[in-house]
Image (cartoon, helix red, strand yellow):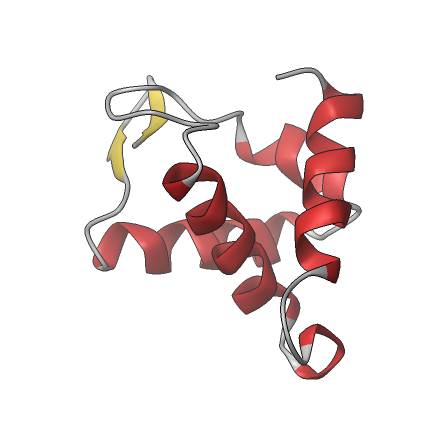
Length: 88
């Protein structure tokens, strides 16, 4: 997914989440990534974009992206391989 597509996806999906303006940024990103998984944007075993690329495309801090990814990992939606990336 190109940075422009990623940015568009984030903004389109974050606008469709009820009370999005009242959610912390990490929670909103979690919900957008989860929606992407549910809609088949990212499939099982597929690598997600690197955290820095996500942060830049979504105009978020790297800490916000790391927190969202870590939470999704703890929920079992993602898994991480050191040196390889984050996967669905």
